[in-house]
Length: 453
Image (cartoon, rainbow, N blue to C red; front, side, top):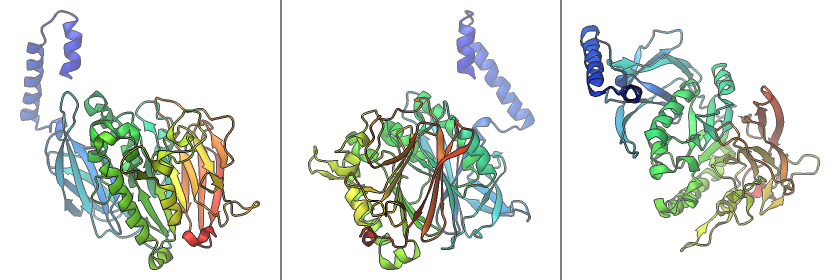
């Protein structure tokens, strides 16, 4: 407040120090007389993430160190009859002001699957608004519903209002945000990050908001992204996996190929982690329980946009690896193909594109009549047009044969993992007031590497 006031008053030739001192004294007097908690202890930017069966992580922000408590209870039961304590970590933004931001995390455990809870978070110095969430059903027969997208900015977030409404209408169980947040979270000494997290609270405080890093998070070694989100695992949300229904989900960083200044060792560490995770998920006993393997990473292996991004090149680093470094870094296409990854979700390109089943730059449809019934290669979906200040991209007028459907409309995707054999996808155009402009069923009677033959 004082900074803005200083600029205005200085234009009139008035010294600002006495004004600021008066404002500070007024604020302190108000606090002492009325007992009002200062705004820096007020919880904000509340969001959820899935922590595994019967659990949920609640994350929020304050600007002073305060209590980390969640009070919650079943809808229809006694309000806030349960309590859980967590902790706050100090995040010092690397911008010029070195702003101090406290990130609070509390894990709720022993939740009843499919039960709806009401909660708020904070402590004696300030409480958040009241929110509700439904605990995820950990049954193998659960058919979870998702919205997924990338490249949603603080400015021109065109799809946000529709996503907010649909989330609060209980249309989704989980949201997948596939990189690029706020544009950019570090801007204005991380205030843009604060504002964006406030914007998505009306989604992320109601359903788990699962993420992966994009190129717009790269500043200061991805520090805003790594500190603000609370994904499973021990790699600060850069890569992790989780299970839901009949699917195993893997989130990873494509950015390890493009930011060597933060350490190429991350690329090799992630690759080994991916290999180990896929090997575990592909064991016959695990694949029998969760046959679908779905990945999400920001920069695609393939795309038909006309912007010279990595995915427009035959020797894409994400797809084929980096041969310009020593030792050479492996790409991901062979790894995902060899472990029978079924579906690969991407963003980065500010367009929507559905590909035919593809491997090695060639189409491997299940059949001419039913290309997605028992496909012979992974299916790729690019959903990067949720809305940001960079607007939408243009397409190459002569796409490769693997490009099945594409659109430059602003929008987002929906997905339902129906059961062990059927998965449904559709694309929503926000430009066309929520019209579904593309849809497909993927049907797989067999999963894993042997399904390709």
